[in-house]
Length: 240
Image (tube, rainbow, N blue to C red; front, side):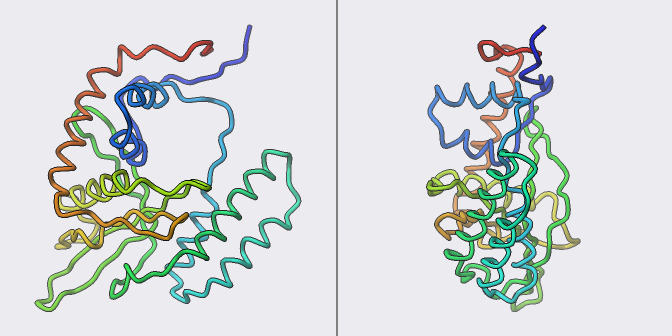
């Protein structure tokens, strides 16, 4: 009997990153997105969790010294690796950290208090469970002592700039979500503080002026995803 290649996710769910990518894709690619979320590959995939953790800690530390990031990347590459996959993953993460160090300016976070983000609860949008993992929480108090809040997510794809359309959808979702579920009592979400940061280019995409429209567009597509979920066939050759 062949080894399993995929696991089945019975109920509709995806990450916010997946949903934002979905919104920036063609109709044909969208069906593939749903399929890949429903049938998850078992094979090990390169992740950049370590790089994101290093970048997050550096942001919270507040020193803004890129030399610290380059030192972290160099230390990662001096490790003893368990296997070829471990080596490849570590080098990918080191590349991420170096690129973040070289492109990050921080001007878009000026005036904000930066804290490490806690786990955000998943949200159900028109039948689809959406999960997201912001890197940092952002707060500020304005001139009339109102508490403004936001979050920033980190993204990175080696050699590929983030599509601005995708970044704005991702940030618009965070803005709309925080309006209904602030992470601090009496906090009011602010578009300029809901950010998707592309570590490859150093650009941060804030929630745009039409964020409510974009969120509603995403919510409508979630209904489409939920309706299609049960009828999406597995990829050819998949073993469960």
